[in-house]
Length: 327
Image (cartoon, rainbow, N blue to C red):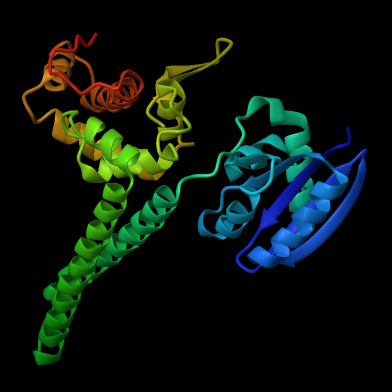
């Protein structure tokens, strides 16, 4: 059976394909549209029954590919761009064609180390888009609040005071938009019985609210991938790693900067809420602080525990009970 390795470099408007077959390279550049992708993948499927297709995770720009790939039986891999960049070693220069070739070479060498991509449900895809829009609105609101703060320091006439009122009106409008987006997310969750049940399950954990639960749901593709708590904790950047080399380098274990910052951020807020409530996590936090542990280090351990508890509840199909023994 013929086997090929396909690397895809994704941009907003176009896709660059590199097809590596028996060390022979073929290149194709097509529009990032469903019809164009469908036509090319059908031709590939006819000639090569077994194909390993790899792409970087670029968010929205992947969606047309996802829509078409779910109709085929290819082995598909969606990889963090940082992983590919760090794996190819020292290189000079780049363009879309070269990037596609490097992705094809990467998956040929490393496909056995990764899990195949599985299509997410329509609900998860929609929630992913809505959460992204919510983050954008929150960032926008934060920026306007900073502008108001700066303007108040220099408000010296009617024009600047009027500008402050305009910005305050914008903040109210953006807050309204955020509330509407959250309502849409709730409707999507309610429309998917499985997702609704699992989200309700992890919201029983102290400190875990709707935003944290929704974020965990989309990062795990509806609790279908990264269900191993250790892998999810590494993905979220809450696992400390040792830095040691001979006798010249030895530091305390530290969390890696290679993390999903969105998930890490919501887990931070959840951990801060959890240690303010009366529960086992608060008891754990206070006990470790009394032992002389650094507060931020203990808070990171709480983030790690939140992930382990959430995945345990999903695996055991149970709800959180405030009687867990936390070491």
